[in-house]
Image (cartoon, rainbow, N blue to C red; front, side, top):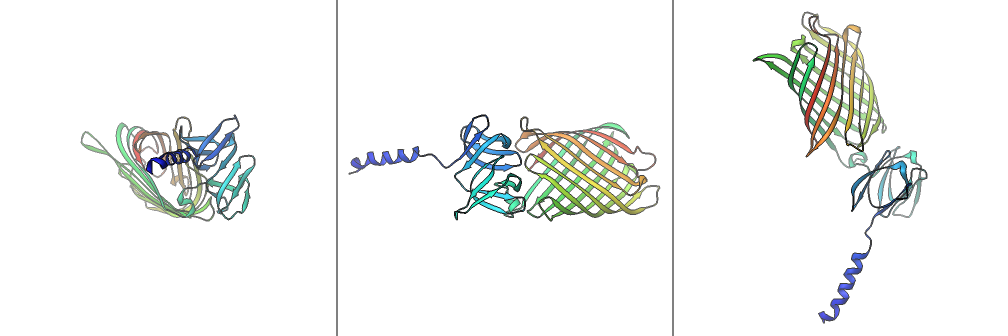
Length: 338
């Protein structure tokens, strides 16, 4: 009996193996056609996984048509979630057919992300961060090479974000301490739309050899998140702070201050190199201005390790009279990110 039905079983197995697996069809303006799976569409970057070339990053503007035969999740800019099979292109927008048979039309400008990360739709909390050790070449108050540490951790949910940042410099030369400084900051952002948010900031810092016993800034801000994507991020905010400074040989200074923050990065598709810039300014009057900025390039080294080349520029009008108010630092960092 088994010998009689064995050919039938083999034929059925070959039939099912030969059936095409569920996949998305992608047509490009140059005539290429790809078959695979949509991982994410964010801005002009389409992450598309194929069996033969792995995950590809495709410029969405070069697509003429994308058709899925599996459900995808579409997040609109007004925070609606649409789920179903999708046909779309940059020129024609999106057509989503839901499981209930409803057909929904969405313009390109309405869509924020296709298959967004879980935290963007309230399904999870995402933690990211980075710690760095850096070789420093400093020109300013001194000329030396030292080792510094800094780190950052961010918790992101659908409607809020919590950040922690720390820096530590403890330099020695011939057994003597030449620099002893630290900075700790925390930041909480509450989003009222996908881009606009209100923030509360707190910064505490100490720099013994610049005569800064203790300084802190505390206060609210309003910010705007221009981009928050895997390959580009940009935010800016302005705030009003209570500022307190204890400087050696000077009376304690307490005042209201204004300030701003600009923070952005961009990852180039071809080289997978990330360019970044961060700057902050606290200003109550020209004698109490504190400006910090970091600009650099970061490259992945594999296994979560990162290498960076960075320029830090600082201007601190509150330092002791005998120290240089301007500081320019060149750093080469080895870090780990998650």
